[in-house]
Structure formats: structure tokens, C-alpha cells
Length: 232
Image (cartoon, one colour):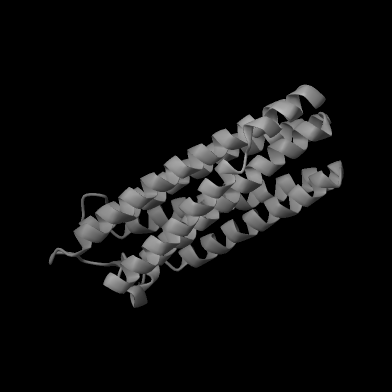
């Protein structure tokens, strides 16, 4: 268990370090120059990106606290693992594909290719909705099998991790909807590109956090799995 906890802590530390580097790389004198040279989007862009990085750093800290609480609770003798939902692997694949689709959309936006931007946003949104639907179906599987929040500590942490991550995904879909609306209305390409880049950054963050949570949920090899190897 100790090795697994150290491994996950290092993964979280890498995410926080990466976010911090992205935040401090935004230099205020460059932002002021952008305001002087190009009014509107260019002036607002550094501030918006900085705000996103700060939010992601705070969200990462929240997940670190949850993981720490989980690791402490795991040491109690009454811990009982849950059966492992097979659908979690498919859900993970959907989120990976959504993140890749977002990155492809960024390249399309940088090439000023509105058609592919719309297609990329559509694909990433569809895949993300599929991920959320899959997560809800996993909840239904557990509910039908008699596993509720109050059943055990393992079920409580399973619902907590997946619910908090799902809420962050829903928040990302709000930004995705705004970016998609701009793309379909034919808004200024610079604004569309900024929205797409922010969405892509957020989707990569969601994927990174989910990889850590997925390890907590199913990887018995690191000694921290909420679910056992027995399928649901």
C-alpha cells in the first residue's frame, strides 16, 4: 500500500508542478504588450489562461485531499473492496478519445479550419457525454446490486471520487458549449481558437485526474484499489 500511495502522490505532484509552471510562464509585461498591440482578445487571453491554471491547481489540491483521506481510511480493518465494473475501462477509453479529439481541434483552430473545428468539438463533446453516461450506468449497476453510499467506506469513496470528477466534467461541458456556439456562429477565429485551447487544457486535466482515480478504483497491484478483481 505504501508503494502505491507514493506512486499516486508523485503523479499528483507532477500534475501540480505542470500547472504551476504553466501559470508562472504567463508574464505580466507580455500581457501588457498584448493589450497595447492588439485590443480585445489578445489582451484578455493571458488573464483567462492564468485564471484557468489557478482553478486547475485548486481542483488538483482538492483531489489530493480526497486521495489522502482515502489512503488513511484504507488502513482500517473493516475495509471491504467492491466488485470491479467492467464498463470503467470503456469509460476511460472514451475520455482518452475525447482528450485526443480536443487536441486535434486545437490544431484545426490554429490552422483556421472552421469545418474541422466544428467536427472536432462535436466529436469531443459526444465522447464526453458518452463518458458521463457510462459513469451513470456504472452507478446504476452498483445500485441494482445493493451497493449504496451508506453500504461501506469503499462504496462511499467510489461515489465520492466519481461524482466530484463528474461534476468537473459537467463544468467543462459548459465551456465546451460556449466554444461550440462560437464556432457554429462563425465568430472571430481568434476567440474560437482561445476557447478551444482552454477546453483542450481542461480536458487534458480531466483525463490526468481520471487516470489517477482509475488506478485507485481498479489497480490492486499498487495496494490501493477500491474494487477487487472480481467483476460486477
